[in-house]
Image 1 (cartoon, rainbow, N blue to C red):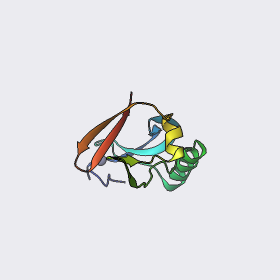
Image 2: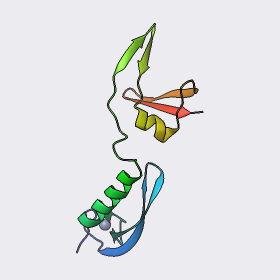
Image 3: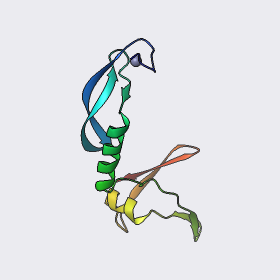
Image 4: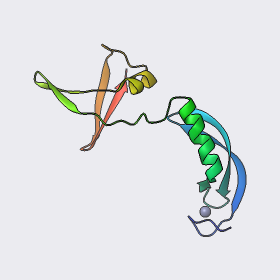
Length: 109
Ligand SMILES: [Zn+2]
């Protein structure tokens, strides 16, 4: 089978470490292109990865939230599951760093 990414290499079966949100989820069977290293997980393996990610409570941490007004400032609510994942506590100081006009990074200090 030719690589669908580079169209030059062929795939080789390998165990690949899978990392999600900075946590090592495990080693999984994957097809890796010998030329460009494009990695494909077959559907059964994708299901295994998803199950493991869900088991660790890392699934669905990306959240939609609304901006509220508090005095002259704006307030962004962080859902409980995300706060727990980040070990973020009330009163903790964080650094707000704009990445561009559409992205804001919150850095725990
Ligand atoms: Zn390739």
